[in-house]
Image 1: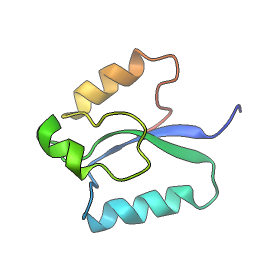
Image 2 (image 1 turned 180 degrees about the vertical axis):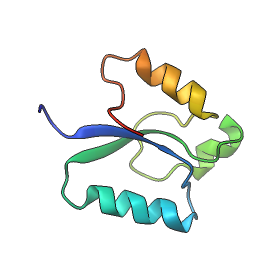
Image 3 (image 1 turned 135 degrees about the vertical axis):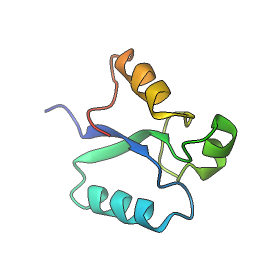
Image 4 (image 1 turned 135 degrees about the horizontal axis):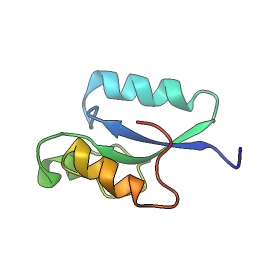
Length: 80
């Protein structure tokens, strides 16, 4: 494997208790990096401020949008 796995998160935006728990658990062994997300699930406007630090791509508004965008990338996410 070349580098850590790339993952996208659905939900779990800033202030969401369980989102932070999942991000911390995934980061424990350094084998995965948060790169994409649909954090509020409603609109891009609501998702952007909800994005946790560490996400490297602009937050998307719905899961389908994130999945389509990531599938089109050569460096798309490995899991969500």
